[in-house]
Image 1 (tube, rainbow, N blue to C red):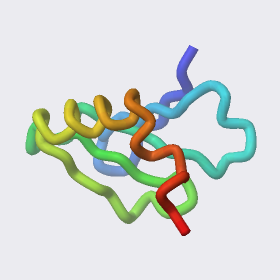
Image 2: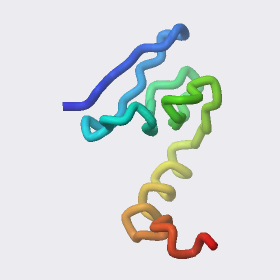
Image 3: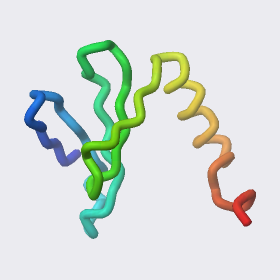
Image 4: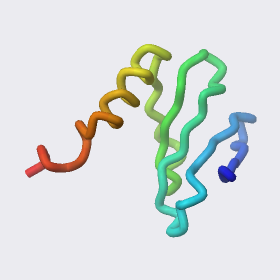
Length: 73
């Protein structure tokens, strides 16, 4: 079951039920402009907005392991 919150703009945000620390990422695919939003629970005022195609590309890169941290030095 996902955790869902609704902010003051009426936007619904979901985060993983595995998020126990409160320092998690939330996603909303119901933004008024049709984009997908991603934000940190600790800084909800900062929202990254992705077009639908950009979001699909991002998820594909995640699935491929392109953000596993090995490239970060």
